Length: 296
Image (tube, rainbow, N blue to C red; front, side, top):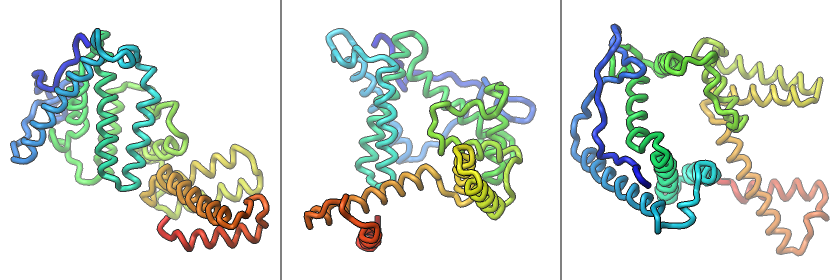
């Protein structure tokens, strides 16, 4: 890479604020994090490790480096980025912290790789990426870095949405959701966003009634639209139950898979083809699988 940009580069500090003490969209205030022993030491070590990672990626992309790395483009590494993100989620679900550390490292490689490609194209550097993140966090937390008052999570999220709208200057507050986002996640996020401006049920009983209403409509007219409306309502119920619907469904899929595989193994030991099982045998085996695998 011709230019990557390191975390040791000096980042500009600006202190412009509007009359309410809120950082203006393009000019966050400068601030200092008080030094605190282990935190400062850890960040120093992280900076050294990040710079070493930059150097390694630069060597891989440089003439005489790795042929595969030198051939990669933004689009080429997109599928790998998604794969790494899914592996991080799986590590979290398993509470596998060794795996999580490794997968976060893989994700970090991809982030730096994208930044390196952009630096080669003279678009931006890794330092620009970090500075942008710093500025965004300051702008969107005026209750911490400014004079805005926000004592509850609800107030924080409402302020966040207002600031984001001012930054993006989009026609709709819903335009920021990626088109390729998984539909169940998108349904959840749509409900989150619109709830911040008052479009929501007052409590979970309200959304439960909506789920029942949509189920009745599906029973009356079993079609794609009614089925979709029911799924959307269930995603909103997840918000009120503080359950991520994507995680819940993923774990349900895992339970189903493991229980089915338990039945497969049991039938294999008896040389009993699955296709020959009766409905009653399937029910009995499924209940047995649930009992044998209570923690699944």
